[in-house]
Figure 1 (cartoon, helix red, strand yellow):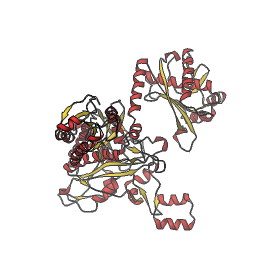
Figure 2 (figure 1 turned 120 degrees about the vertical axis):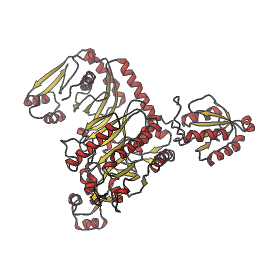
Figure 3 (figure 1 turned 90 degrees about the vertical axis):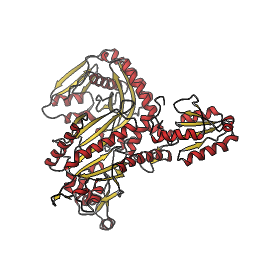
Figure 4 (figure 1 turned 30 degrees about the vertical axis):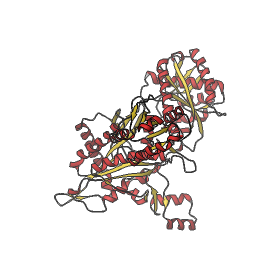
Length: 611
């Protein structure tokens, strides 16, 4: 077991104090687990009544009393039989007995006691409760026992703790900023996307404003792809089961995919024969029955495009790209706005090349990812080289192929001078990969872009090209996606910019504010000029005071707005204002401002830091 840091010990101790307080207030509570986490701690509990945020204050108050009592944390080791008796003795059999059974034979079994509370626990903890100087309960959520939707849903109380009140205050301020930037909140306020239960959880409905951002991103990356000689392709959202059997997605990816769909003729036969649902599913899985599945990845489709015609070494590399929508069966408890969904579109591409071309192609992929991050002001990122876990059975392919792929990837990142960390067990099931993990303005990490080297799928699909020796050779395959998922990327981007997008991405780039109704025709003429230049522009023709119109521009996070008064109209000018600077910036003709705006958009200028 990994030794806990001082902060982890503090947070783990806090989870025990939380459980002590809950049992004092709600004595019939059954406890499950309460570990420390990266940012705090939680405890899963089975209570007769449903708690809400108002109950946290009373629990927190009781925790402070326990801390003031300065209870000592005492470790107690015992045999397995004694442990069962202890659990029974303090009335916590419902979940703790199962947790005790999880402990491997021969491993030390221990409890920790503080005051009247005793808990099955490996440790470790601070010495006394008074060591806890700064903590805060944060929220309550539902959590299935052992993370299984078939089990009972428990109540999870989240909290955090730090070694000083100052560190706690900084963290709570960061949480407030995160709440203000929450893409779900801003997505609703700015009309970017919605999720509807009648459509399905985890399935994003892009509204017109959000679709503009998505289209601007896809246009941006498409221009980069065209310049790098990628061929754009389109493929179906569904494919035959045999295709995904060959690739390994079915059944190796079974837990993360939607249920298979039968061929219509096969379905009719089953319906008439009265075969049970279990037999029906078994026949689909075994291949006795033909069927389809929603694609979990795009690669098998691109492989079939490559394989649709012969290739010479002179044709390579072949680069195929697609904004391909894929589907994953994520558990409902893991769904989170746009960042964890069941249907998402990848800026996916697959490169088929020779081994000699591999280094240069990977460099091109890495350069593309860096271009994306630099353009969008995401300069704070780290590179993770995800490798195979030799003790896991989730990977497909020969060990020799894995060794070649991992050696190639590590050699290339070293040659390119990339700072990276190696993380065994994080590879895709068919090959190792480079993941780009960005840190946003609040210090949170998100895994976005990825580049993967694959010797396995070309082997599984028997891909080939004719070499200079006129013999067949096996190409190497590279999977790459700079954005990763457009849904996740946009969710992260909303929070990164707090909804204040750079002008080139903003759904509404300019708003014109006439000061009275008589000036609306002049405002419409300026609007027409801007629309002709493909600027996303509107006129606020509502009969309202100028101050209210300006406030609405800031609420709607419009990057540029133009104030049109009678004097300005007579002189052919507008007062220019930006989202970043509430003071009027000066007078310009509409054409002058339009020229500056077009240059700003062409250069993909980033927002002012004051935004």
